Length: 383
Image (cartoon, rainbow, N blue to C red; front, side, top):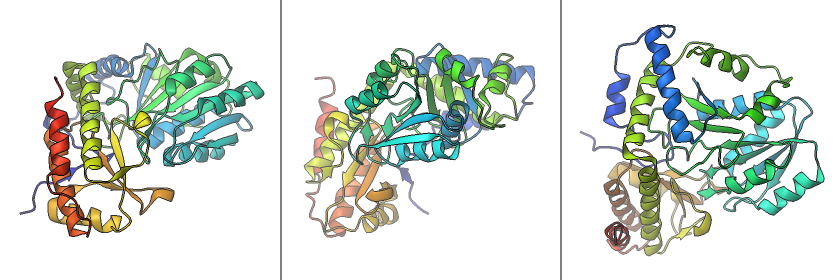
């Protein structure tokens, strides 16, 4: 018998038993009164997690589908837009915007760096015709968090709408959609939201609707105006992922019962313990601590260790799965996720396995050193 798999990657993440049980309920009609009531409840609960009074739409697609929906509804061919690239998913926004005919000014800040607000401010001052700014809140590929609140202050003074990818942070980090003046916020189901892949969530502000209603880009499935019309009747334009809705309500109930402040505090604690453990082993983090993620930790692999061999050893011998690097960081880093249905014991087990795997791959890590640092963080939680 194979040992239990510990999924410590930034999506898909472990799904709680309560969510699995909810998804096993019998299917109901997606046009039934019972499902309409479920949509109404889920929408209200999503608004609480998004910290918004705006509509939040549930789309049957991955997080990338949600990002494409945002681009398709905002970008008309020829529109000037800014995309902020601090890693793979900032890069993806640029790729999507070009597919829809945008005139893209892609600002590259470097993988492992955060957005320099001053650069964006100068761009907006220089060109009043910029239609949108596309930013990533939590850049999963590098473990970097960007200052969305600061970007919101800038775009609020400009005609440009702010479109944010919060796929890997919503439900795990304090994201104040309305307070930060985010016009379109996008997230997905398979990360901190504790669900399987298959749903995207999109909130839309009044400022964004003014742009969407004038949009000229061709779209069908991702038409948010159609989605708004259907949501007004607690419905969806096309067939819904009924079982995932059951799971979504169960996951939202878990988060709201725990309390959002406690959810955010838990993620911060897990991140702090993971980073302390990694540094105690003599390993270097990729981003600076002041803009490091609460949901994923990116670690620079020692030069003497093959990262793919390290990950294979972790998986094959200890059944712990961590992620590798993407793009220009492929073969250089590994990433430990601590989001969603993750607890202190998961972090301690992962660090213990990492210590052994590093030694087996030729790096002399002191056994117990990382675990001890993580334990000290956890023990000092209330002190």
